[in-house]
Image (cartoon, rainbow, N blue to C red):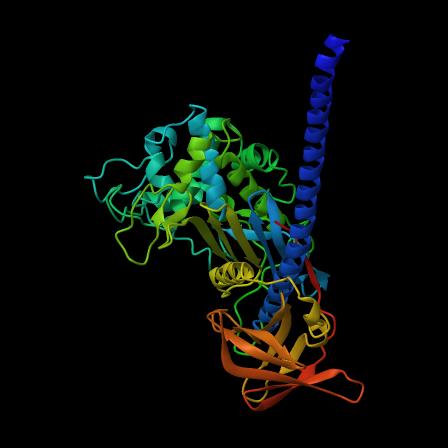
Length: 514
């Protein structure tokens, strides 16, 4: 009995400790799940407001700038924060677009070419200091500056080769867009001269990246098209990406090309073309969602310990400064990318694209693992401003307050105020949208969002007050109603603006949460 009497309390204590551990685990799990659900609900409201505002802004820009098709995506590490598509892939055929509509990315093709070259370097099949003349038997150029040495793979990658920008074929010229064959490119290059010593300054060259494509073919024994599609697109499941526009897809799955706006305010159809020997400089077509897959791969590889297409250290070298510009108008260069570090210490890697009938921009916040892509099937559309706008809106989202106090719930039925209001004759219109617990006014059209957005906090009834730099200002807006109690007008700075009703817009977008 004594033995039992001595051990019974100990057994009970152990059982109690075990039970308490299980209880604590269950409680912690419940709290984590509750917190996750709460955060998910909060993020849902937050990013739905963000997504709606982005959609309204880009849809309006499409209309005001007569843009046939635009698509975009924002990626945060392995998740998509926003993606959307606007307009038609083919106006004449009334083919609506979606986030899987293909578009030429023009010079953004260079980052895929650089990736392929660096893969061959990783495999020991190529060296950055290999001379181009030793790899390509047909290569010839008038070497005007001998002090810099020979053109190398490295100098092609970081645009310090000193080679001319383009051949003399005038492939941007309408309507034919006469891109050269391989033999025509070498023939043109043989009578052109270098413009600076190798390695002394950045001098952007499409010819340089055309040569890199031929180097890939020489080293691998397969075409550039087959190598890129097999070694990059297929492993990353970029199933809607191709090298060279295909006539069978053009105007349907692949967006048709359109010119800049003409005097009549309209764009014309640009002729179908293929880039031939310039494929590796500007010949890839892809989609917003496939660019998201490419970004996810880079963010995934950044923290990896093993290779995935590239070694992690190799990818980092592509984002690192490999050549410093001597001009204030040029970014430094990595391998394939323009690179810079802003005044907040954020590291950026980016590239834009412009070719007949298409413009695009791809920008990565390497520090915080966020990537932005905009694709457009028309010329003279400044895509970097749209990426800048996406960054601006998403940064604003961090300040959204979504928690609603009990006494505010009835007053904060914000949907009754949201919509478009006519600002004629002095301006065009603005959109009133929900933004957490308040309203955001977006003046349209807006190439820059810094001065086009205004946030208003609810005061009482149908009155809202402007918030500037986190503080209430003296400016207020007042909504008025009709006999059926529907909001029909807004009074702002003494002027009254009537609500506009638009037909449903053709927007395909989605928002996924952090």
